[in-house]
Image 1 (cartoon, rainbow, N blue to C red):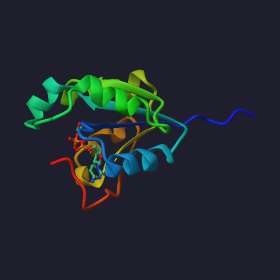
Image 2: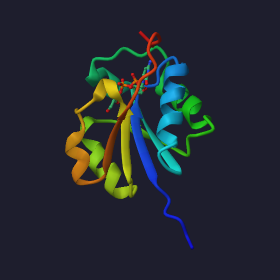
Image 3: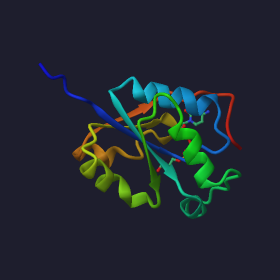
Image 4: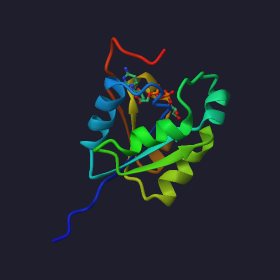
Length: 124
Ligand code: C2G
């Protein structure tokens, strides 16, 4: 009997990687079996108005070496999520709850969950 592999995706900058990022990725991975993390490129962070200290290539190398992460892709724009979910056959989209409600439109394509953040730490 083959069990379904729940594929999950989450998006983020992951600048100055810290325990809050790790806890979020662990919580997201616990929702399924295969975790894809889309990391905001330096150019997209400029669009987001977010200053990053660590360049994309280093943020990507750190995250792809996290035990619970199975795949890393670049996040280059706001609009790619629906296409990512379709092309990667994603079952669950999950974000920290500072994004609560912001991505409910993705419910047409997959489950959308907002998970607790880890407070008292942030990259800023
Ligand atoms: N996070 C957390 N606890 C913290 C800080 C961040 O749980 N103390 C979570 C956020 O809720 C988010 C993820 O870690 O789900 C990545 O956080 P950021 O790198 O700040 O991501 P952000 O800049 O919000 O980018 O399209 C979505 C955006 O790319 C999200």
